[in-house]
Length: 282
Image (cartoon, rainbow, N blue to C red; front, side):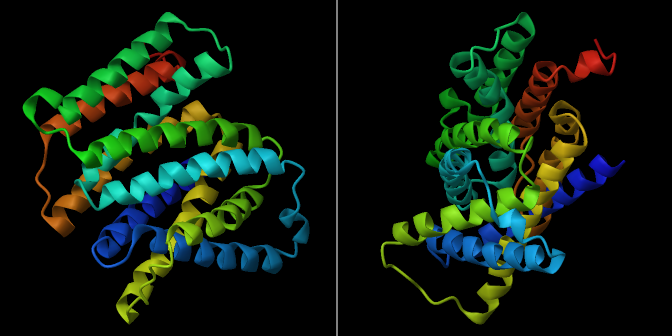
């Protein structure tokens, strides 16, 4: 039950962050938003660590692993923020569900994990889901879709690093180094093109900063509580939740291709993670 609550917190946080990113996408440069997100997140997580009286959480012996995770996570996150301003929220989240499929491919190619029939079926269903969503032959393939697809690969590599980090690192340590390492990268990429946010923008910047920290903290806590494959099923709820948010707040049309394609990717992910066998569904 505890893992369920952590995943609900992660889903709510990711959805809030998406809304905040959409609200600011037409007003502030993406890298400026990411810079302020990292800064706000860094202040929040440092305050939490000091409040808990655990300064040892600022220390790590795995700097290289944190750096690797954050370089790829930065790429994925920047792509995610760019895509949110370019395509419907449901499409962004649906294409983000290719991440577990990429994890399977990366693990097979770079970690020499065995390629099984189950994994091949999972990858095949995932790619079929992608084709249904982007529909390249129907003239619907857009730059935003491509940005999110490549961003998903960045997230996948970051997850491989994260799986190794959570075995020894506290979730607060992980999010502390995420904010600390990504802050200068984002600041440099603003290129000096800085716009002072208006008062109303700071509300959404605080939402993005706070939700970014809580999303990664909740997800890391859930990973520590149960197996990663067990929490993936709940993560799939992000697609219908964000589709509903997009419809209610932004008048985005309900796209059956996104739902069907997302459904195929969900089934592929479940097969790839062994969820169906674990829960006697196959």
